Amino acid sequence: MKTVSTQPIVESANPTAGTEREVFARSVLDAVGANIAVLDRDGTIKAVNDAWTEFARANGDVWGGTRTGVGVKTAAHFPR
View 1 (cartoon, rainbow, N blue to C red):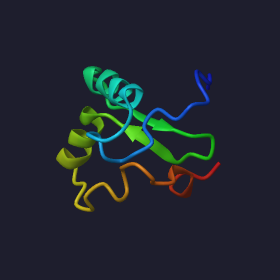
View 2 (view 1 turned 135 degrees about the vertical axis):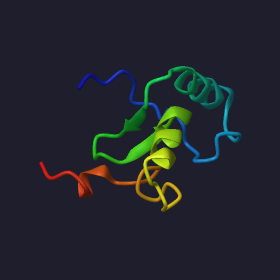
View 3 (view 1 turned 60 degrees about the vertical axis):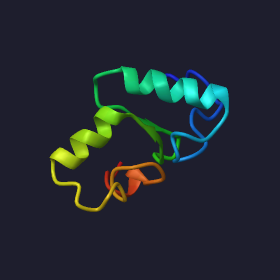
View 4 (view 1 turned 135 degrees about the horizontal axis):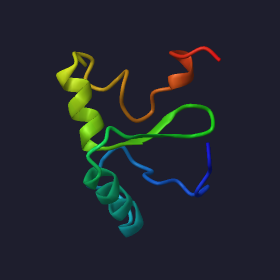
């Protein structure tokens, strides 16, 4: 995995809050049709795009993103 930046892309789970940079990053993620989740080095989801959220909902995410959204530690779900 290649690290592009060490700066946080989206510091808030609220897509309407944040700096101009965060809003721009969110817009870029949402413009991509692929399902995208941005993870930190520990496997924690830092940002997701709309396609990711819609895919989760369409495939039975009855937990409201608590298992597929920002802040979830994916390492807990996938052993190394």
